[in-house]
Structure formats: C-alpha cells, structure tokens
Length: 79
Image (tube, rainbow, N blue to C red):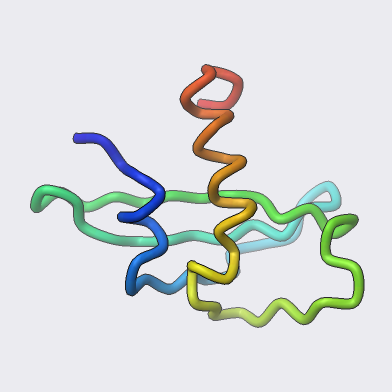
C-alpha cells in the first residue's frame, strides 16, 4: 500500500495535534486500499510568517509541508 500526495490532499482534512520544538504537528486520517492510514507532518512555525493555522484545515492548503514529509520518509530520513 503506497500513500501518495494525491491520496493525502484530495478531499481530506488535516487536524492539529500538538506544538513541539518550533513545529505545528498535523494529522491526516484516511483509508487507502481499505486500510486505515494516519499521516503526521510538521509545519515549522518559522515558515508560517503571519499566516493563520486553524485546528482543522483542508489538507491541500498544507500540501507544501505534506510533500516535504513524504520526501523525508521516502529518503529514509524520517520513519
């Protein structure tokens, strides 16, 4: 089962989980091939500028950081 960027951002919602070490952590819960998937990713506060980050956000609006986390996972830099 491969999770793709499209799976993660199409018609999904990201939910704020916690703040830790300068990062806002969000979680996306979805089903891929009838299997539950939970994907968590950080949004560095330093990247946010004057943006507003709500507790619940359309995942596509956070695609920049979702893509970065997917790349880290594929490169084995983040489990």
